[in-house]
Image (cartoon, rainbow, N blue to C red; front, side, top):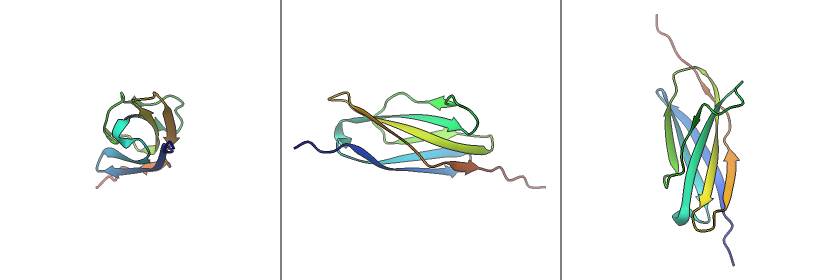
Length: 98
C-alpha cells in the first residue's frame, strides 16, 4: 500500500527581518524536494521564488511591512508527483523607535 503524501502544516514566522518557513510533511520525506513562493498581499505575482531543494525550510529577508503568505510545492523526486499548500497569512510590522 502506498503512503499518502501530504503537507501536514506550514509554520511561518518572522525572526527580525527574516521570514522563516518550516514544512511539516508525511509520506515521502526521504525523496522530497521543496520549492517556496512568497506572496505579499495585493500582489498576484510571487515576490520571491525558490528552486526545488532537499531542505524543508526556507528563509527570506523582508524589509517592507505588510501581509505575506507562502505557497509550498513538495515534489516526490522518484515519481514526479507535486502537491502544494499555502500557509496562513502573516503580518510583518516595522517598529520605529523615536
